[in-house]
Image 1: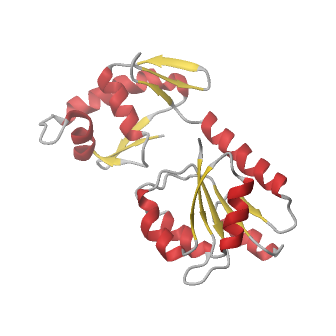
Image 2: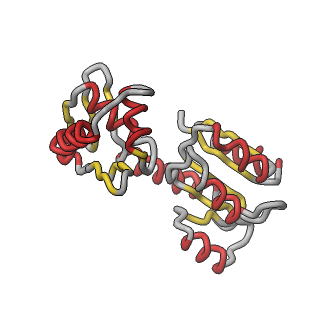
Length: 209
């Protein structure tokens, strides 16, 4: 079941939201400060934020959420009780998916959220650790065990220091010549280009593109 992280200072709106999105797991907070502190420990697929809240508005809360270690550009929606065009422009400038306004029915809001989740999943790599394969958009690629682990670790974030990457894949305290890591990355890149992915190493940081 997909998980929505929903933050709104209005308990009645939270209750209505959970009822409408009963086919999702909804984790909610009615205090944005509490949400910003606890969200780092939550795995979620969609982020939905009210805009007008005490302590932190939706825009400020999103800025804090983006700095958390578990934020990986999850599709984000703002909820608004108004149809203020300036709010919509600001929301879109921040890179969110949409501003869900008061004039939209719950059915329309659900379709917009679900369609974005589907699009996101279509671009996610599927890992099969038993068969040692990865799949994206119907293309299947076979990897070695270490290649699979390396790709899986890099798929979890925006980039990693080389030493941290070696520790995550080969273990803490593992001595490994940098050229060996470069060889693994080079061999992996020769395979994952088939799914339009590439590993890049710049200034000591390794990233999956």
